[in-house]
Length: 375
Ligand code: 13P
Ligand code: SF4
Image (cartoon, rainbow, N blue to C red; front, top):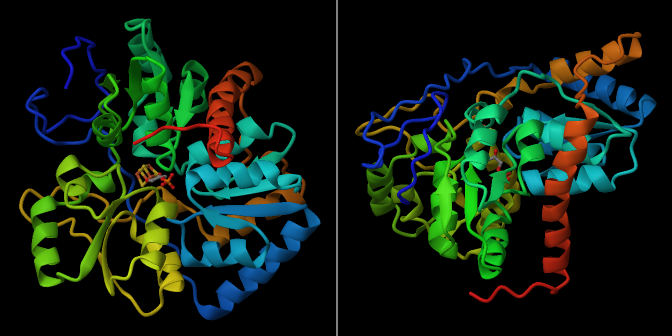
């Protein structure tokens, strides 16, 4: 950890790191977990109603892997996509539909709107937030940047439009290491916000000089290294897959560290018959489809020192369902335009676009082999 003196704002997580000797306790209280439960008849009726409304309104559904199996299936049945946050942004931008429905959390809807101001962007529930976004208020982030004018600011996509507007670069977990390695190779020193675990991981892998904001994800923060070791001992043939929002002690036990898409690819491509997965269990829907014969185990969130508030499932992601998706499309139909629509002030949108566009341009250049990072 670096010897910097920025006063972390009150609304961030405390840390187990001895440099921040305070109990590990989030001040961001997640909402209660309320998952939609549907009978077969209601599910079928809702899906056919939503499909008809989507057609009428020229809409496409973009869903994150952590949303319900019903929403993921619906997205695929209607020509939309189920993906990680980077691909959600790319897909929504490339698709010609006039309306994008984003089933995920608020920053994903905002990213869609930032990239597509001419499109209507709807979400099933606008209260679907993210503990990382909530832990990084724009004014406090701006003070962090002001205190370190010699550093480029790199923010995780899990932030508000206003934070992105202030940042130099946006990254997702799928591309964070590559972008930070690149910036480091260009001689830049960095500020990172808001996820301290992802920031710490990226810093270790890239060797970059980074100052870290102290936010964390309520879901990934809860994975427990000691309990994971025990589970692995019971399943020695299992590969351990870890999302980098998890604590360093959990990441240290991983065979693969990566974004949600990268973890699904690992289940598909690795020869192991079993996997222990440290990320939101919504991802199991796609993992089961990718590798039907393999045993998938949730990484433990219980055990000594357990503080599990969300138990491997994001309560904000769970706010998305077929009922509220149908209601949003119906309200637009019955003359209540603007219901659950993402709107962003133009001056903020235009600035946030620059930092997101840098990431998308970098991703395209890297894919085209125009950026060589070495190891
Ligand atoms: P991905 O970019 O890997 O989909 O992660 C988004 C997220 O919110 C993970 O908690
Ligand atoms: Fe945010 Fe964590 Fe939920 Fe992802 S899983 S949306 S990082 S709270």
